[in-house]
Image 1 (cartoon, each protein chain N blue to C red):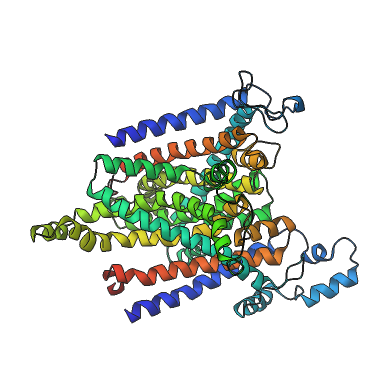
Image 2 (tube, rainbow over the protein chains, first blue to last red):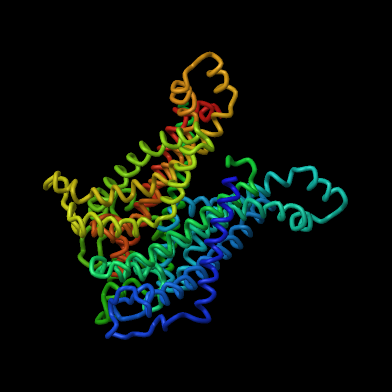
Length: 269
Length: 314
């Protein structure tokens, strides 16, 4: 019962945020970058539903564009982390031996860093930008995927149906691609759903610190950061972006719980 | 038991070595010449060559790594480019600020979240359980830096109960110091209650299904005793692991909270160093935090057998 409620509420939230993000790429109520100092720090009104910021820019339009930026970054980051991690995990679990040991040693070294710290370190190398954030967070989160995939591959390769595929003469790579890899999808999907949330939060945190997408391009994180000096006089500036992050994360967490329960029956509800 | 501890300690050494290697490689991957960066634009070639030799940058990379590692083991992480201060004392000083906040918050969160998760599991699917799960999921979804800003807005600016910016060291005036860390600690506590309560509940539900719990009940043990003596110790092990992970992740993630509350902690030191391109400080902070993370996880693993004797036997 609650499981279905989780899935529905989470799904509705995620779908709304996704449509808001997609809509923003085509249309926003105002120009998210349009400065009008005459309109600066105006509270929410009929013309500007979520008010205006310190440059007179429309907060709703900026939040919508921010959703597009943040969601795209999170999506690409998760894709990068999953592809890299799955590749490393499959190669390690498949070839075993010294390749496995080397890959896993590197993997464990990366896992020995808190994700956001590793990302901050890589931002130093890559520079604070959209692509810098994607690559840094993607590399930071790939090791956890690699570990899950390798574990699944190692446990599956001894199973009867995999053995059967070998017996009928399928080459090893085909056995891997056709029979082992599809079975990694469920655990990776569970991980990827939660990861989307972590990445969104990490990206917001990096933007908030000034290590993410640089202003004037809006992200929820850098909007919150810019709102700090105005928290008392223009509260809406600090409420809107934070609420966007929190609601999106709530949707992903609810959906993540539902996905996990669906695909991983061993876990408690 | 002794064997387990020894094995776990030995396993930590290669991890630490790889962590150091990762930091070293990362810092060498930074585009640009560190010597020119340190000297500024006015440097001539002779000066640059002299500094390069003094810093050992003309040696082969493996040798450089070896020297750097030896110095790091001795506690020498070099000096800051911006002000020439030794990096290690600087880090230790700032680490104190972050550690106090993180430890207080995680301890408080565990004390609230574990009993809460246990109760929710005991009352699974009833109103209390649903409320705990909903509340925890909500808390899990709020970014710490936003909750911090809201706390500042309400308790600092609107109500004026607590100071808004700044920090007072405990050595100077501990009463003032407490006032300044109330908001950051409460913010972090609330956030971490979310994750920990969900974990405690999930593991308690699994334990409650086990036969020995039925057995304990059949023997006539009261529900309080069953929960406290039989469920809690066994359900606590996974939560303990999570506490370890949370502690470590907070050390990386606390920079945002220190920014919100303008606290001179380790996270802020790292971010400021990144902006100032003060690479010795960046390198030191990365290495120090990662080592602390490894050590925290080591301590958690070493505590594991206390809660789950099967671990040391394996």
